[in-house]
Image (cartoon, rainbow, N blue to C red):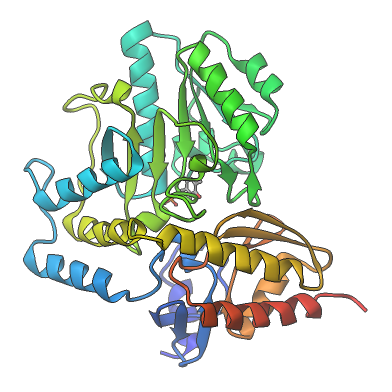
Length: 395
Ligand SMILES: *Cc1c(COP(=O)(O)O)cnc(C)c1O
């Protein structure tokens, strides 16, 4: 197929829910993607933070291929050694007590919401079901996770939405305190609001939220769907502060390219869910778990996370020295660029034309490179980005 054929087939077969860039990616190796015409692109997006080990990591491919050839799926009606090996490793590495495995970030968050409500219902009875989320947050595309998302633009068309969510100003502990009524069972937040424009919360605010929750037996849910699995240079973004959540969700980078969602909880919540209260046909799929196990092995290898932090810092410093860069936000390899001039989407389009895949978030350019990106790939990508940033300056 040539690109035009792909476009035509798309328009006649796929619901038009995505505003796509004009490129059809066909293959990849490391942090370099190749389109259907053979043109190469440095990848600063990892999909959207998904391909954490880059494309076609040999160990990940071997594990996935081997598992696909052995046994791809078995129902959760049966025990399964591959799933349990991965779950055990994930619990140990994350310091959490139990995990529920689903297939996406939204599903992980749905599980977190159900878990928080059931904990509260079991202990306090009806009426203590409210979850306070933050303004400008993003928690997913199912009806309930849209309801939990603190952006009015997501609360359209699909009425009625799930009840029981309220929104506090991010970073304003007084506002959260005011909203902490006796009907609240949980607070849910992202340590760095990703889709909201790479907006980090301060460690001081996170500590204050934790203290407020502790005082009322309100659960703290941290959505690490985008920030987790080493993205910020630590396993979790909350590890840059001194808090631990009661519930933490993961997805994007955890599977290294295959769909996975994980909802992890502390010991206090280990027995809240009972048989029949939650489930998923595909959740914990063996091929997915075999691949995700390789991701965890690499993340826990000596020096891997330090390397992520170091590369992130190098990129940040290089960006700060570029023309048209007003501010760089984020941690590790999750970075947002505020430009002085030019529209982020247009700059991203310019980058893509010149061989660099880069993301946007609100009015920012956003970088979520593969954690394994090489120094040479970083430099090549940054030089393309620098030219696009210069090109956006009006003379
Ligand atoms: C992407 C994202 C989600 C939704 O994940 P899906 O896999 O698309 O369902 C939820 N929360 C955050 C913070 C995300 O970045």
